[in-house]
Length: 96
Length: 351
Image 1 (cartoon, rainbow over the protein chains, first blue to last red):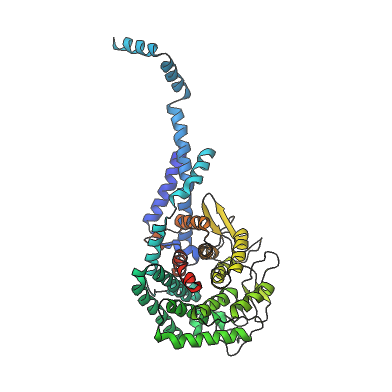
Image 2: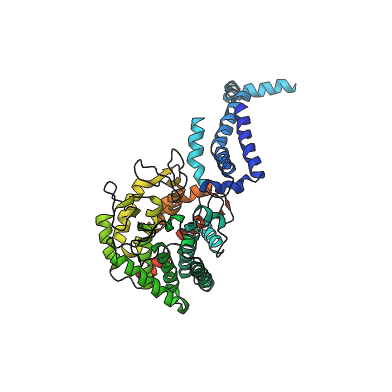
């Protein structure tokens, strides 16, 4: 959850900069304009959002998936698949 | 996290690749604007205002040859750019397009004017005339060509000065390209190339140096921002040296990671940032100036692999809005348009 939150924060910061018009100052990195700080900060936040955030999202998603569906869950499902009668019997008992 | 990072970073460039149609659309957007306001750009470097016009004329000329449906429209745009440039130069002098230190002293050749200005105007007129000769600039072309030839022939390094006691390989090869386009080069290109091979090469890398005094003392060693354009020019009049320099420059200056490409400004461990190199990006040592002009070198050499990487990089950090890149400026955009369009003009001259 922390990784996903961090990735979301990075993306939100970049989107906020974009909405605030900092993209227009990006030319500052080649010595243009009077907003060098905004331009450099915008480019930096963009690169973090594009390169780092997806990795944090993906890693966070996998970690969370393991928490919601622990390996024991899959082992249980696999055992049911190996022994379909057990599943049917279980279902039958549940219905009755 | 590491496997995801490897997979994501390794595949990221696929989101930023530009196919030929997209590149063409970028070039169209850039050249569709004629003379543009350049006040902001001029506060950093007035040369860029001038060079943007040259690159745009070269892009338009290449497109006019490659795409007959654009010829008439592009000739009108080329003429407007040339006329505006010559009018501005007449009204405000060479200094209008030069850095302030142009006034710090006298040219060693007292009768010479900046080869940077004469050479690029010669290229512009020459490129135009290769599509359809224009009577209105014939006298101008003749005068510029004569001045270039005279300045280069009487120099001990067969090189004209761009600034007082300062000759540039960029400007001298551009001037030679202009003479070739105008059909007034004679044997100057081969003489200059012979001298350059002998006296203007960095002994360690074998690359041509960037700038030198009138007598040939090296001022700046090899620099990507100068070398890539020099290579593009050399392809017009000495393909063997062009290929040799491209191979060496690619080996010394090319940067590449996960499908993204860039260029360093200097070989080895040299670091001397200036207005030409632009701010150097730490660790990668990527130079905006060298990376921008590397498009021209890679296009001239037909190095599609690196060109694709350079386009992926500019798409990643260029913030394209339509066909214009926000992190670029007028001259950067014009260089990219020239690189996208590169080829037909040189081919026509050599055929």
